[in-house]
Length: 248
Length: 248
DNA sequence: TGAATTCCCTCTGTATACACTACCGTCTCC
DNA sequence: GGAGACGGTAGTGTATACAGAGGGAATTCA
Image (cartoon, rainbow over all chains, first blue to last red; front, side, top):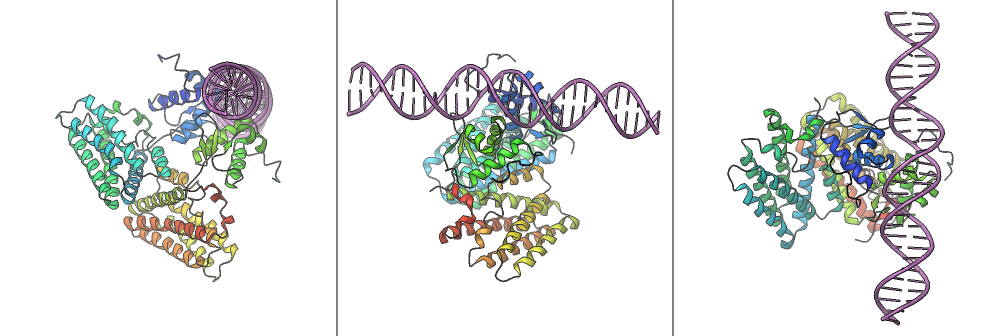
């Protein structure tokens, strides 16, 4: 906790939310463990009111679970839950791609996507991909997915995708860093990038079904990464959120 | 407001949430209109703390929108938003049906669904369907959809479907009552019920793609109802939530 | 010795007071 | 007459006090 005097422009509620989210994702709190308001007050340094606010938001975000008798506990996820969350995200992104394809997208709107693609191409060109390049990829990948989602021009859908991606292990970039430790790393990235190209092509040609299908399959790469990472049992420290996984 | 002394077993927060939700859905507040905390305090009779809590929850629910400078306003929806929300719900229910089909469901789990189907059959048998029968249908239909969703046995998916159905016009029963005023009423109900039968059949035979497709199409009946109701411009009072629609 | 009951303590739910910010209206000056 | 600045007024963000409920531990009785 280096920043004691954290920027006053951000509300106490947001500060508490960030601090508590980190706390949960870092795994310092066990799944199922109650997170009391007073405890949270001590940790965050803000008073109970914004802490309560933050807890409610984290519950909606899916990281916490309400205890029937009151208060909140850290939510536990099974491996199945995570795989389902990925499939869910893929389904929603597939819908977004289909909307974009069916409704038509101007070439002006497609430009930023294509720029994104080119930048990613530059990254995956190196053969052993550096860790830095992986970090850049994560950012660019997140950007690509955000842009694609917006192409649907559907506020309700964008909202739902954002919520589905809020869980770190369900987000499009959730398991990319885990790949960096895998021998198959580059291969997977190349496939992912091909998916990106295909979906843009499909949208351009107004092939809704194709755009939808490819985005669904694209999400399944994340599931594949997760399974590989879990099997190899290596570099799991790159995936702090996995502390939330329980047997199941 | 007949119930001044509303049941003490329910928290003030929930009471405020219900009261404010009613207020918004009734259309007494215009879309875009700010809903101040003090105003909400007067209306609900509880203090600011639970009111704030309720406002946050209603925002997550999708009925309110945060104002950047603070506070909340009533959210506005375009007709397109509503149609998209319906398609979205259908997509998610389709995924649930596919999960159920692919993963297999015991005949014991299917039984309550089939009971539901039989009860609905009893209702749609009458030729001019009474308004009471429509009400019963709404309840049974909601039950069927809830049971079907649970067949997916996927907590993340169930959660997401619940959220997607929270918007009244996106819920499976959102536009059923609107039908009751339409001449095509019975026909539409018969088709809907056929969808119900088909999806159960598909799940039983583990036909994932078929189960998914039929649920998507099933949701589109709601879109059709909406369009019919809007075109006929009749009995819109059966759809109070439409007060939230703005031109668009 | 085991089970049940009671008491206490901790925690949440709620109310309210205080401070600060943003917005709106008015007044003044150019 | 218009534009900018100043002041007032809501209205939210935050802190904190109080009350009530739930859970756990210890004690007592069978």
